[in-house]
Length: 58
Image (cartoon, rainbow, N blue to C red; front, side, top):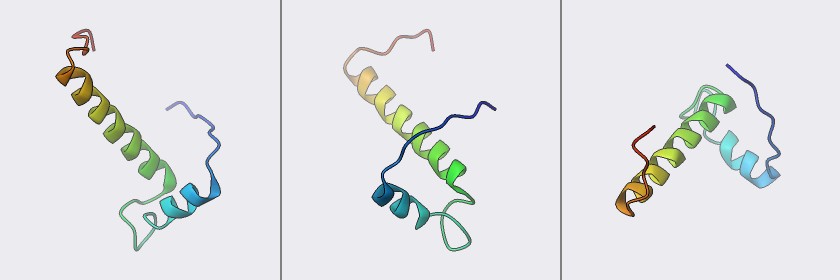
């Protein structure tokens, strides 16, 4: 799996960390970020489909 590096504002990282770990929804930061990216892309696809912009080549 490819690795990427991103800069994240401290307040966003603090919020993310509230959802990670034994008491959180995600095992680690990577899982949380992957889930967020997937959800965001799904939402964007729904918007594009609604607006007639979705390309069937995906």
